[in-house]
Length: 182
Ligand code: IMP
Ligand code: MG
Image 1 (cartoon, rainbow, N blue to C red):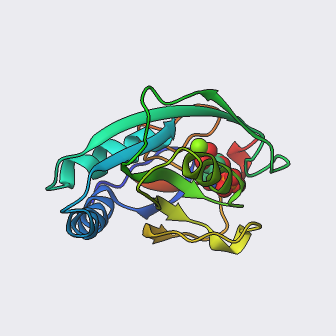
Image 2 (cartoon, rainbow, N blue to C red; image 1 turned 30 degrees about the horizontal axis):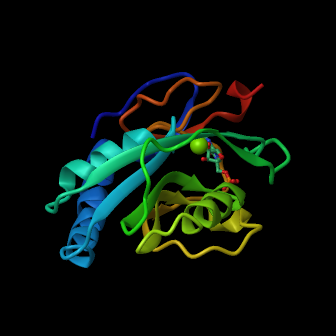
């Protein structure tokens, strides 16, 4: 495992190898479940794109991808609950088997809003796949169909997750030092 000595990191939660291995396991579950389906992965810009590409490369079935962007006031420090689509999908999802791919489900407001919104567009099926689950902070009850890791109630960076738009490109997941947050 690469042990990065970066000043803003308190400790590494999951190494690149641990994440890859877990993504491979979840991708195998998805490949099996959707082997007769018509699968489309949908990710929310920007954070979830990193997870979507890692997951998609491990799938052994044909898959389409599409993206949307939201403006959200739902973050670790802000007031949750207000979500709006800022960039919509390119294509219809009618009749398709859709998996919404999330980087993290925290309070659950973002994922619930998106699952409700996408369900209304006539997909054949819809499921939720999240790399991270911080269920201790959940406000909205939500079923996560595929999940890689449960994490503690600490702010994390890497694997698509940012602090002030930085650190998304770290290929491991780390806890941000509290004194780096301002
Ligand atoms: P929710 O609506 O509270 O579930 O919000 C989830 C969103 O908040 C995620 O998609 C992230 O953009 C952001 N978020 C929540 N926790 C963290 C974190 O620890 N690091 C970086 N972003 C986070
Ligand atoms: Mg996000």
